[in-house]
Image (cartoon, rainbow, N blue to C red; front, side, top):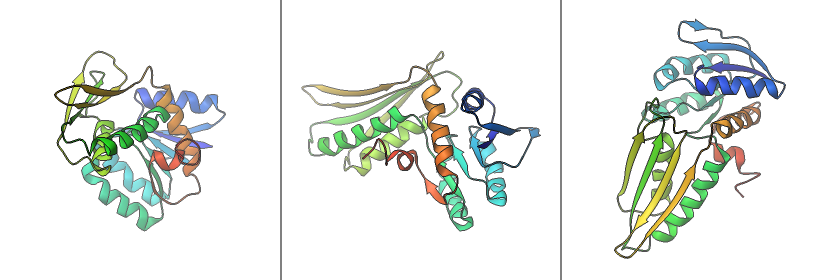
Length: 224
């Protein structure tokens, strides 16, 4: 598979390393001031929300399927999605490509559905990441909040964030009453899980049209 890497930070470099290990070809890099829009089968975008605004029209113009791991652009999702669907472009967009996080989302959804009937419990989400992560709360925390709301938990869900050191990523969902506390936690050890998930999504989206999540990518294997 010919892969175009968009954004060459920590995740971009990890995608490059694993892609080459798996026998793929990295045909170019799209960086600020150094863009190589080479012919590719798929793009993997771990740039920034600001860069995505400029990059997305290129995906439309080239009909280039894309895996988007960049976060912080939720306010533009409806526009991007409408443009992609009109153009017949294949997109996998996810706040988190880790298989473990996506399984965690399933667990949180079911717990929130059951806790929705327990009026004595309030809910909260806390996430912690490295001090260079720009968006807070994380895209995964927002995704978990949306998941809980969609599951029927209609009370306030407080979100808090920590940015310190080199924490790869920890998300805790809590339910608290006067008598006890329930906590569900997912902790990342390193970024390899994100990278493997992103490349899995890249293989999957080639030849498809439409807007998809990581849950769509995984549903035939781990989420059913």
